[in-house]
Amino acid sequence: MRGETRVVLLCGIFLISLAACGCIEDHDRSRLRIADIDISPESVTSTEVALNVTAYVENRGDDCSGDVKLLLKAFDSSSGLLADQTTTPAGTIQKERTKPVSQSINVKREGGYRIEAVLFEDEEIVDKKTVKIYGIGDLDPNIYDIGVRVQEMDFLVKNVTDFRVTIGVDVYLTNEGEFTSEDLSMLIKARESDAGLLADKIWTSTGTIKSGTTIIRSCDIAVPDNYNYIVEVLIWKNDTIVERGEGVVQLNPKRVIAKDAQVISDNVRVEDFMPEEEAAEWDEYRARTAGMPKKTPGFTSALTLACVAIAIAIVVVAAMRSRRRDDND
Image (cartoon, rainbow, N blue to C red):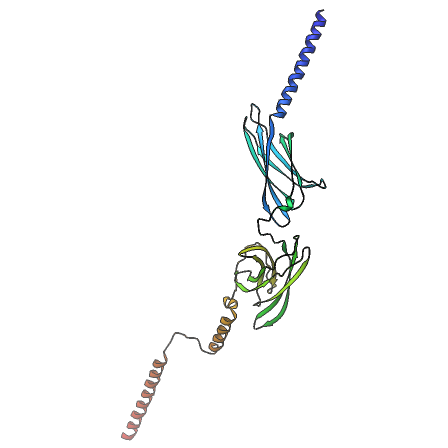
């Protein structure tokens, strides 16, 4: 009888222990949860939407949480394929507190998506929440993304006269947007790589570009010879630069341009970078003064003439005295 009682007691203790463990485990797993999710468009371009997703993580436990992080996934509603995902650490959450965790995720500006937030504590999944969104394609772009990209630049030497080089610039423009692009202003400029002086610039336009196509826009720039240049392309919409690109032209191959490196200027002739009208005047002045002797310290012209006159007078007086002596003799 005692043995049976003992077995019953042991079984009861075992069951109570299992129940207690189960309660503790359930309690540990359920003390953190995703209470709510807010989604708003952060930026809308012609092709993509950056979504700001804020999940409110609630700690309903009696103690501080472990290490918390949130995994965010975006699935295409039509295909079910994963479009983007990101993970953000949230640190620890104090007891009976709710902490907002914001993340940004990028999706195509079309169709709908299933946004899934997965909550981790100490590398274990403790909660999951899903939100569906539709009508992404109806969002209006709120930043200047024209869809046009500067893909490539080519340079061709067309002419060399009076130490100036005429360079043909070909700019390859690709429209990655969904619609035909606008005709926008485009500035092309050449900047000397050492001193950063602007050698030449010209305004042109992109023209309209059909979706998914590449065109070439060409222009000429004239720069002083024997220098290295960074040629920049800036596309403007109203008063805003919306796209840029750059290339390198080396007319002085003895030097190598290291992009993003500090360059020490040396042997830069500033007059080479004057506008053509002023440069012509400078060249005329140099040609006019090339044969003139340089001013050096010494006698002035008046003083020189005076010295010569004195010398002549001395010679004349000496000659007259010599004649008088001869006559007396």
